[in-house]
Image (tube, rainbow, N blue to C red; front, side, top):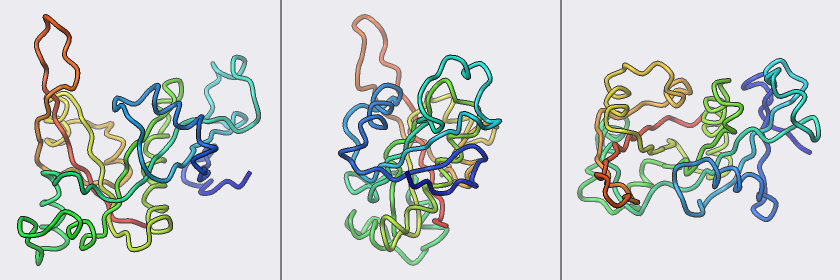
Length: 216
């Protein structure tokens, strides 16, 4: 087993996984990620060394298997061409002010900005709060130009409650794992209708945040 980037977070390493062999990663994503559907892109497994100090003491007697256990996963794909994220104009204003995004096609924007997108990040709930999500987001910045030559920036969009999204934009949320990994959050929030509404209950809209970071 070839492990990569073992120095991002002691006790954590990564492995690019061919899709036919990625069932465990995709299963973890399906079980614990808020978005449904089958994500497209390159799949990366995040593994934890259960003999390391990072591995929780409470899990040592209850988890079986080899020394390296699946801790999380990443799906990294090409930049978003299905829509034009609201916050993308902030990225262009900072790094490519010469571009006029409204007059460009979506694929042209992706090519000119050199965009790659994080389609999914997931961490095993039992291992959350250890910095693994930040480590995965950091590794994405290293892997993007290797998996997608020409990549210059990574974008990612997340849905949160409106109040939570406002707290992130206002700098009031200290534990934002993407910002800890060096991502910038655009100062805009786009509102999204819920995909599933329970009969008899009000539909609660969520706030979509747009993050971006240069590749490493």
